[in-house]
Image (cartoon, rainbow, N blue to C red; front, side, top):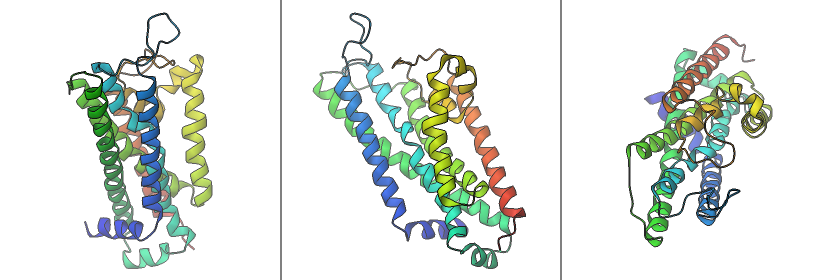
Length: 260
């Protein structure tokens, strides 16, 4: 716990954490606003809305899962939590203070869990306000089903695990700019290609993004389809597997590398 508190103190003494939190909030509000604005609008087929009406249960489930799409931002924060040590050469004093490097890595991973949960709770709080106001104004009935609970928990899990992914990437690519560019390219380019091209979807469903989408899937088809996704439980297991791999990468690279 002492090392986790120390890592959180390092993070909160910089401005980046609240900048990333503000960007996450802005992105979540944009996603919520677009979804609310286009809810019930007729899609390509006559009489079939691409987004369910604001007074429906499926609309609420869709809204609760939107926060997972902002997982890139805590992921970037996770990258910085690791690479900043090398960029500013504080890693030497860190290891002198705590010679057992595995404890340092465990502290960073623990802090990453806290950061991811914080971001997730903030996003879900915004979603709750948006859902209550929108559904009430539309004359619908608020509901919280088992599927909704799974999506809410899934959103928290996605943001938490993506923070750990960032720490793993930062340990593997010690150059901060290079690690951030790699994270952004993976989320916005590579995973987008795998999900957009039907021929690549059998592979795309096994990527972190595909697994995250499966875990928070509301069943609403927004144009890419949902039949190619893994079951929710399988998506969760795949994400957990990636988290373990990235944690192992962070440990292995940090323990073995020369820091000079």
